[in-house]
Length: 102
Image (tube, rainbow, N blue to C red):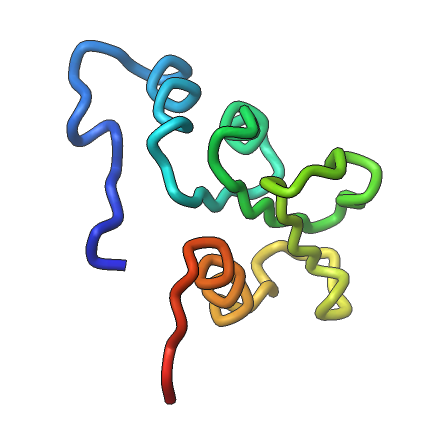
């Protein structure tokens, strides 16, 4: 994703929560584990792909078109690190409308 932006590299006058929540209106897609950052990104302005390990996404993620959970249980594990990068990239591509030809 050559055009990926790290807001903290550009915005110098604000920090932390202001950047995260304020930038959601301008982000095409965000990826985060189920954490405070993911909750701050879940303003419903930008799609958020939330990665779940031992927690149940059905219990902790409300149904909304911009909240896309990926569970490690899909891969017979409770460890979020087991989620394949390819699976995450597949969801990113769906969200931003890219197709990859092979």
